[in-house]
Length: 299
Image 1 (cartoon, rainbow, N blue to C red):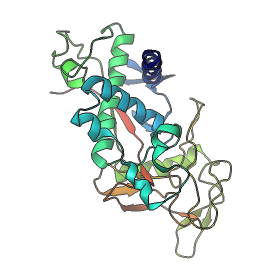
Image 2: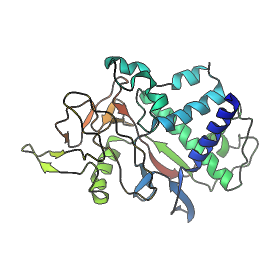
Image 3: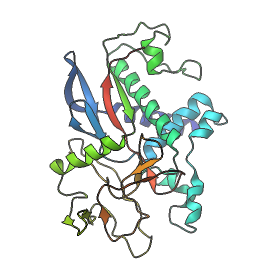
Image 4: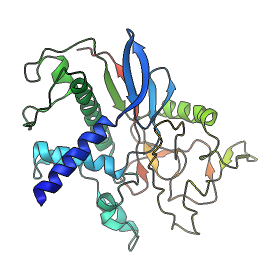
């Protein structure tokens, strides 16, 4: 039974990574055509943004891979686990410590800056690996372990299973958005979407803009802090909506110590302007999303 479950999870992981490529094609460099990341929105030439936050489901696949490669007792696997103690501030809260495992389509929280960086690097490696397999430049290595797993650096430097690299292939670099990038994303999303957080906009006396959360996109919060996370699944690969820049959870920036956007733990009187706050410790109201660019490898 355990073997059957493990095989199912492996298949799901492979399908997910393959799903990181959408049907949409884009010429980026040297007239090489690549699939753009599924679930991401192209905001500019070779600049893609996840339409939602990284979900528990996404992060669980990273944990599953890490456990398979390094072992459940390894320091690397243990260091990747989110901190479930972030729920201690909310005793009896619905999600509690099972949040990661049973709320698959909700944003992952309890994540450190370094864990978000490590996930982004892992995602870059896996997506390039799938791309190379699709191009028949690699075959799946069913015996990957801690000594021979695929990375971008190993491939381009000719250190992966003795395979000669194709240096003309671009690789996807997933990363956290900088503050400047996030502000740019916010400035562009209004051109795409009038129905997400841009619902009932109004100017305040101090010049800021108030955004009231649309009921169909977010659960109506009660008084106090009973608001629950919004499920962040986006089933439409052609959607040009970037969800929850201001609500749901704040998001870790590449600029260390900074979180971007509002979150469920703030006052429910409205979401205000470009919220930028400090991020010093893990908590239950901060997650992250990725941006992506295709790049040419340089040693």
